[in-house]
Amino acid sequence: MSSAPFIVVKDLVKHFPLKAGLFSRAAEKVHAVNGVSLAIERGRTHGLVGESGSGKTTTARLLLRVIEPDSGSFSFGETPDVFALGPPELKKLRRGMQYIFQDPYASLNPKMQIRGIVTEPLRYGEGSSRLSSRELDDTAAGLLERVGLSGSDIRKYPHEFSGGQRQRICIARALSARPSFIVCDEPVSSLDVSIQSQILNLLLDIQEETGISYLFIAHNLAVVFYLSDYVSVMYAGRIVEAGPSKVLSSRARHPYTRLLLAAMPGNRSAEGGAPPDSGEPPSLIRLPPGCAFYSRCPQRSQECAREVPPLEETESGHHSACFRER
Image 1 (cartoon, one colour):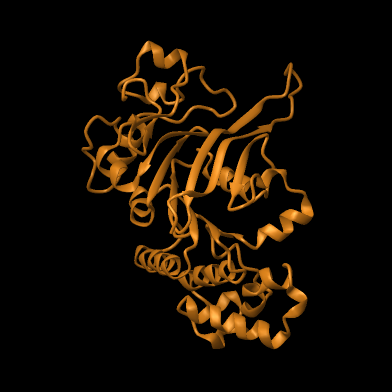
Image 2 (image 1 turned 120 degrees about the horizontal axis):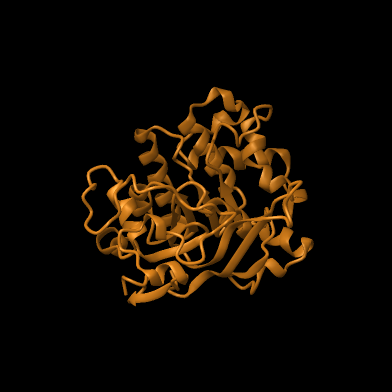
């Protein structure tokens, strides 16, 4: 594994316009992602954590160009900017980037056999014409066995599997294109705790075998710390703290990260954090002029109300966006 970043995202911005109302002077916007930057090394996992509505999934969808960014850049391996690619070039690159969805019940077509679901990225990707039906069946069976299922399951349908088994099928589908980067968007949040650990360990085993890089999105810090090498904490469309997983779990600097730590079972007395009932996130339509966490922060000052704190390095590899914690 190389220490140089394999994936670099800089200043990613996405605002969704709202239709102007009858008495509105101008259409308003939802400021979903506001200048997000992150880097992922080859064979490593970058965790992205935050409350619902913080912009995590929008960030993931932007990277895979399911939606288009307003601005920003995204380098992927030897591709200097994925956002600058036209449709033909993007189609060639897509097999290298795959997505594991949050809900395994909604992300599998109930009318398709498992063989078709797992091999779909191959049948519609580059070079698909070279694969026979027998080869696709053999590939599907091998992938199912790789994720802990039986190769004989390729003729079954999604309704014949449990939630954990369905998520294994989703992982097999993502692996079929032999990607070097997978976005895992809350892949265990809908599963029982006992099944969650199985899926997380499966992802770790696959990474060790293949050197795949993950962007792992979740709102559960315990899950993120378990799987991730590096973690970025997102709040109201911005990264407010980022650092190695072990550093953030023991020496978090930003009050919002401490709030998340305080909300973890067994860790409700994290020092310096805001209490778990410290209010609601701000509206993404009308963001406050200063720090978005100002109204909930126990350490706020007048400076925080006037300016947005920049994300600055506080120690090697550890960054925080807080005027009071530098």
